[in-house]
Image (cartoon, rainbow, N blue to C red; front, side, top):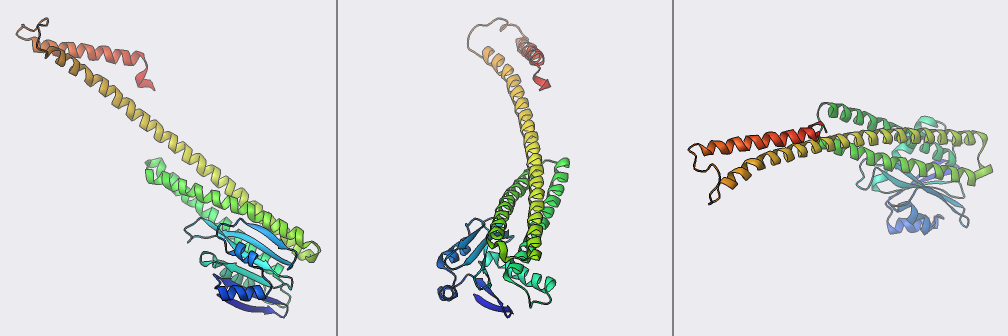
Length: 304
């Protein structure tokens, strides 16, 4: 899909989603290189800013939250500013949400779009996308609180798995936020004198928001990791206790087997001709069990 939106007399927004070969050829005629198209459409591309000195285009690969993705919690989307000052969003089916964010941002922040530039669109969109990270981190913290509360009452394997899922999600988000920051900083450095004082201040604000999101993600990841580790250790302790009990029972049950097996052999043994010799086997078994329990107590087996 390739749609054209005339924002004002100097700015066109090209909305691209999973472009066909014909649409890619059309983008190349507009000045977008095939190499940059490949970067923008690659689901495994790292977030960064790519500058093409020949065409004068700036490609920003930006990681965004993708709740419906099967690949990861975040995926890259391409935003491109050409030498004429036009703006491109190059998305796949899992990252089309950027168009919704861009539309909403333009409506809310810029009722008068006559002086809107591609840099303004990028900065506003980046701010909204970073705010979405913060919102998602807050949601993760709430889910973690619910899981933690349930674990206080009863340890469940499903809850531990949920914690691991949250921990994995935070790792993806933290890495994406860091690489997004690098992409924003590189674009700011490249644009240099092309941005006015208002845009410089907005760049600084966006980077501050990114830093806040990184701090929140770091803290959330550390808390989730600590809780997951604590309950894993608790599970291990419970398993160790169960194994020690089974070991003790196995040792105790071995005594009657040895005694009865010994007296069951077809040979002459002491006390076998006595009328109540079978009671003697019980007595010997009981005595040996008491001795075994005494040895276990002395070895502090029950105190571990």
